[in-house]
Length: 269
Length: 148
Picture 1 (spheres, rainbow over the protein chains, first blue to last red):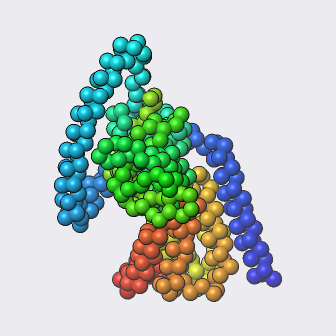
Picture 2: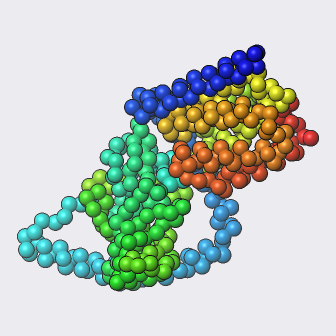
Picture 3: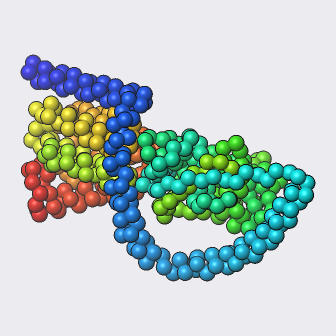
């Protein structure tokens, strides 16, 4: 009888705490704890940020050492690509100037310049990064690597809690981005599709078999009402065999999120 | 591992996981060590009132300091506590290899539910760490740390 009573007491206690946990989940979903969380985050952000920097300083050299040879090869390759890109930029600038002059001649208004707000990366959580900023972006605001027109796409704002903004990376299963494939050399458009993640890897999907997919092709944002076009997402590393109407390719992210220290919200484009 | 140590380590790791350590890592280790200490000699049966509040508080720490939805991790930890009572006699807590099983399970479940990831690498690393610690360093059920 005694043992039975104790088992029943334990069950009651477990049930009570499960109920309490469910109540907490409900209250937090109603943002009941937001003020407390906001205050705590204000105190914790500098601490977590310094920890993040320390980790990068501690483990960065180890990672670099282990892959120094491949890094050297990568640097040479990047230098070559950079030279090619510079050549392209020069020709593009010439076209841009010509375009601007033509617009003035026609009396057409110039497109508004892009606006950016900086944010510091606090931590990287699998397929999300947490950044802190005095600016409060809207959900869905695009996040890029640098405050330049174009640039590298990092992700989209998922949620905001006080000064901490959660940014959903393209490697998240929840993320879907319309994308274009451009030729690495000429910038010519080759294909369009949707970037989705499977087990942390990026895949360009729903590309018509009539379109061309090549390894090394640049994958950029297709552009919609929230995300501007032609932000670099990554490069095609493997074209997968097509099944039916569509073909698919594996995409390597342009920048590993662990290496980020600062990012920028695009507030206007 | 005593309740106070368990809580202190939960607090410390909840602050360090994400900015410094992998986002899911220590929770399985802490829970397993805590359970093994209270399971030894059937202590767990008599100590429900003592253990469950600590599991709950530890979960709150992880959710709060990792800026996640409060209540989810306590729920996972309490359900683990429930399983602990159900299998208190069948589960060989004193065998290091068996101690690693809940570590993997807790890390995978929390990773999937809270962060939407399956942290296989950190779960296996945590399990190996637990086996190493319980085989060579600690006697967690004796409430002290020492070389065996």
